[in-house]
Amino acid sequence: MERVPFLELATNPHVPQADIKTLPGPRIIKHHLLYDVIPKGANEKTLDDPNVLFIKYEDLRKDLVSHVRMIANFLNQPLSDDLINRIAEQCSFSGMKKNASSFSMPTKEGEASFLRKGVVGDWRNYFTPELNDRFDRKCWQN
Image (cartoon, rainbow, N blue to C red; front, side, top):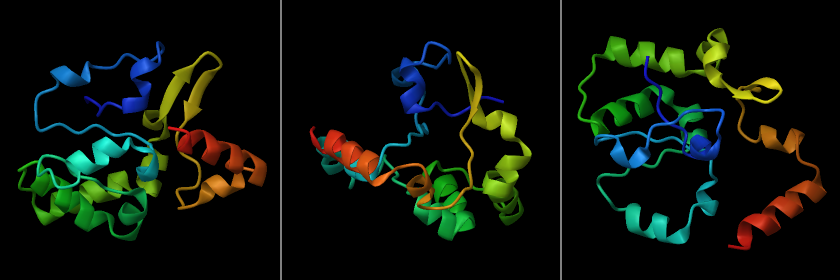
């Protein structure tokens, strides 16, 4: 099964990626950049662009089924309610945990998983206040 490219992995030599510019439209590109960190020009130019769909993780956690439907509509792909529910189940955190090998990437040390707990704000368990300050300063420099 062909995977949706991660924008951040385009520079990782261990993970082959398609050239994003050559992918046919409409296309899906996923990334993990904070909304506030996306370059301002990108936000302003694309917020009202009918060819761009912004979805936040927090919104997916609140109502995954309606967001799967929204994505299908955005891509002009009519799907049955049954298929939308099956996609939502496979894309839920518990569904992804069942297929954890699909949510990892090769590193020099082996495999690194993208899955932790699947809760909003879990980063706070990994960042000390000092690290969070450093991160904020670095992000807001640009």
